[in-house]
Amino acid sequence: MPHSPGEALGPDDCVDPVDRKLQRLLAEIGTAAVDDPVRISAMNLAVTMPPARAWSDQDRDKLGAGLASMLRRHRLLGGGEVTTT
Image 1 (spheres, rainbow, N blue to C red):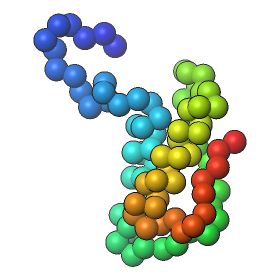
Image 2 (tube, one colour):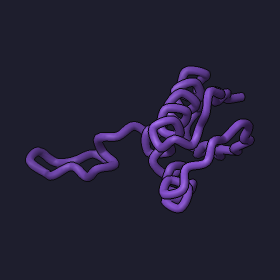
Image 3 (cartoon, rainbow, N blue to C red):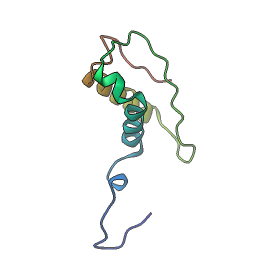
């Protein structure tokens, strides 16, 4: 949605859709998992991308890399990796 000059931008206006999806995924993982860290050796995570936009391979790679980074930061992912398909 276009903004008029001088209008304040909301937080969603400055974050791209992949970053917003990552933020939602971390929220869905929940704080309980962060408070009691668990190493994830294998995980299947289905992410439904909004159909309003075409998601490129680059977007999917960014989502996978970002999710892996967030999981590692919260000590939820061991030495594994996140792959996207």
